[in-house]
Amino acid sequence: MSDATTLDPQAVTDADAATRSQTSVIDQRPALDVHLQTARSPLAHLFTVRADANAGVVLEEKAFLGHLMLRGDPAQSGFAEAVEVALGLALPLTSSTLNLNDAGVSIQWLAPDEWLIIVPGEEAFAFEQALHEQLSGRYQVVNVSGGQTVVSLSGAQARQVLMKSTPTDVHPRAFPVGRGVPAVFAKATLILRHVSAKEGESEFELVIRRSFADYLGRWLLDASEEFGVCIKA
Image (cartoon, rainbow, N blue to C red; front, side):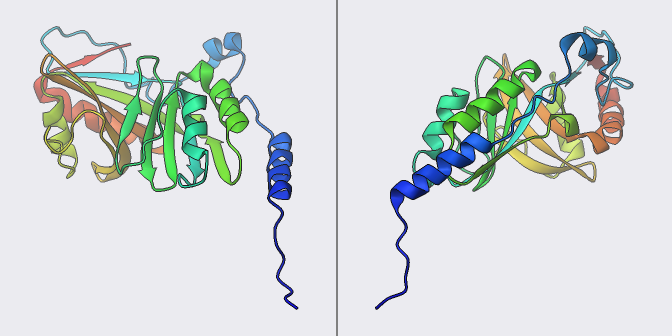
């Protein structure tokens, strides 16, 4: 007689439900009045407003966004569908792809079982809750908002700055809108994303770890100086 144990599908379902009910999700963002008085972004000391109508490079720190790391198995039944319901965006299943919408929500493929989700900062907790409500089985959602910031790089010479800074091929044929990759940048690492192209000018986003922010911010300012730099608030 075999000693093998057969799992009861209903028992597995009940276990998943019990796990979801015990998940602790904490809103890490301070109350709005406290946040506005005390918050200081990783690049606030470097990226002070600089107007230049003829600048070839435009820099802007998109500070205080919500950054969520999602891990899971896309082959798991219902996983991709649950993510789409929670975010309103399809789960990217192809290497180095990025899906985003006009509401400031994006999800980027980082690995076969890992994605970076970026949302408006005040909505991070709601999206985190929505993911936990929709997902089941084995998955992980981690709020890493405090450890990262985003820099927007645009302007007629934005691609030239990238070519000076990274070995990643950023030619439009190799790096179209909707592509995002982890990249070596000025001997550091970051996530490089091509988010839009309007009237012949592209906008790229650099997702930077807080510990690299000062170094990479100074590099960007120096590398952009020859083209003229405009810094948005």
